[in-house]
Amino acid sequence: MAAAARLAVAGHRVAVYERSRTHGGGVGRLAREGFAFDTGPGLLHLPAVHRDLFVKTGKRPLEQCVEMTQVDPAVRHVFADGTDVALPNASRAGVVAALDAAAGPGAGERWSDLVNRGREVWDATRRPLLEEPLREDGVERLRRDPYPGAARRGLFRRAAPRTLEAVAARELKDPRLVALLESHALAYGLDPRVAPASATVLPYMEQTFGSWYVRGGLRALAYALYERCLERRVEFFFGAEAVGVVEKDGRAAGLRLADGDTAGADLVVAGVSPGRLAALAPGATGPSAVPVPPGRVSVLLALSGARPEGTVHRTVVHGDRLAELDAVFGTGAPGTGSYRPTVTVLRPDDPTTRPDDAHEAVTLTATVAPHGRVDWADDGVAAEFAERMVRAAAAAVPGLPERVLWREVRTPAHTEAETGAEGGGVPAPVLAGAGGAYLRPANTTRMPGLYLVGGFSHPGGGLAHAGMSGALVAGLVVEGADFRGSQ
Image 1 (spheres, one colour):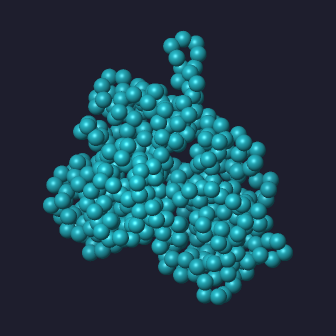
Image 2 (cartoon, one colour):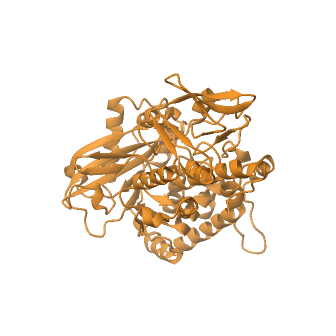
Image 3 (tube, one colour):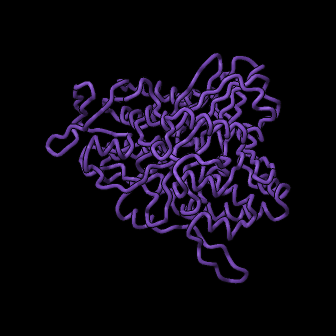
């Protein structure tokens, strides 16, 4: 939709063909008995991306279309040893003070030094990773990890560590700070044991630009963008699954639909997973060895009892590190094991999510192995894992089991069925380093007239990155190969 709105403003007639019955892809909403829950992401980071989108596509800015508030504290962490700390939103000094109080003097400064090095990664990669089309000369440069080595005592820097795990072990040392850093990677489905050191940019971005909540959930943002598309006369066809890209004279010339119809077009923009793309347009991006990324299990809880005053919006309850990483990333035996998962608990202070103030809507999420490596369609498997998540979340919500009126469990099997993404995998943002292993296919393809948008293409997953990919595709279509990137 971000690409569609921008292309419509540029004068194109745009039609969106969506396989599901509604707009928004993975940004969904479940409503039942007066309760409402996001079924995709729950918080917005880098809101400037969407502010720019709304400025460039209409008269009303983002803040007139949705109500956004900064989440403060940004997050509370409950570590495996019971240490409990709340970190303020977008306050470097506040984070330092909170970590010193929780983990001892010097802990905050060690974390701050690491975030400063994350800023160096941001400065080095912001343009080529997020704001410019991916080109061959840029790929070569992005194969190298820009994370700097920490300075030794004296004049010289040490060689930079190669993985996020190595960064944590050498520069943080305290297991609670290690867990804090690695939780940023795990939340995006990245294995800290092999993810490049440049992944330190993730906590830098969150701590610097803050976390934002949209009243009515992020589904309200998807609806606002849908309305903006309608204002720009974008047409939508729901329940319209594309099964192939029509090729004519060596160019993309439309879509073949599952019902047998054909939709002609001058160009095609595809927002699909690699497996779907290979079926739609074989050979358009060449061979791909990108594995299916991890997915998410969400447990949506309808609770009796009011949300207590001063409750933190987001809490991360840390689990069994090694067992969890082995289970999620495939280094252990298939299955869900018996480990305690790391659970993110979202408790929004939003009257639109609950029937009245005597109830509360709470969402639990955990990163898990994709469907196929675990049979998430097995109700017993899903229910047992959900029960483990509820037990873990009780560390953040006292008396949680007794307050549950009902729950809904959503797994990667649901994600696969609704979005078509194989395994229900959720793509991570792109990262520099590791020889380019964490990059995604460029927004242009080998088939002229076929462009790629969304989390499975450059610049990767996440709401902000999806908005950036829409801007890049629109720029490439309007300005052609000379387009140098978003301004």
